[in-house]
Length: 293
Image (cartoon, rainbow, N blue to C red; front, side):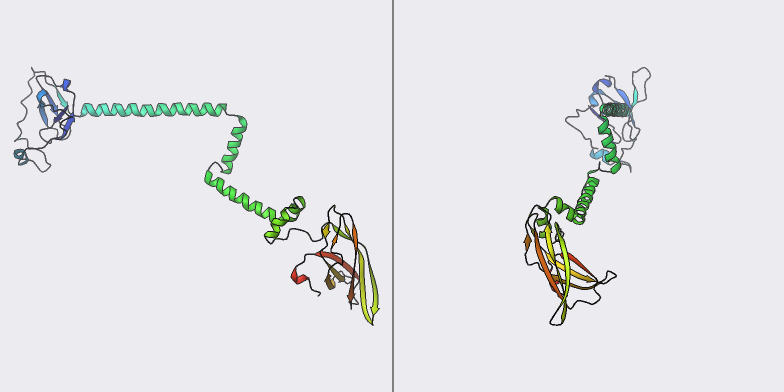
């Protein structure tokens, strides 16, 4: 049920059974007005939720919008013989709300306590290796999905660097990777890998008064597969090991079968008189190295 203060029209919800037949003195919690409430003054809250001043009452409102006391007939003096009770309207409701809030807070703490106990119990029953793994993840910061993404990027970058700098070993282990490196324009095969020079000799002679050096020998295949023979680079070194002359040539026989050997020969015209040693290597067939120097 509803009762409205006659001075400020503040509405309060009260139970009908708290207002006896002889009425009850109430005090407004807003404007402190004391007024008498009779059972017939109660209004059904489901039918009316607002109260307004009448046109006559509006003429006597003060600056705060409250009805002046001299216009509203004040409640008669309290008769000690009457069983009237003076009450601050809204106080009981406030106390009830506080009690309800306290109970709500107690419920929250009770739920938190139960959840904490459950967490401790779950942590106690968790396997040791799970705890260790969680601590490692927490120390590395990968419990956060965002940090895990950063670690993934770092691993991919590290893997790419490893595949590049260890490309020769990768191709030796996985020969099919050579095509992938080749498609990316990365050289990943050591020129002449599995081949070696054997029985290499040099012969110095003159042809039409032109000094020449013939270098010849065998190219042996140590592998169990047929290998294409790459270009061969011959270098003339002086007694200190410095390169003083070099030429690049192709082998007459372009490939060598498994566990076999093929002969090779190359003539150098007008060799330097300071040449002391001869050094042979296999090189990649790049365009700028296909010409004689």
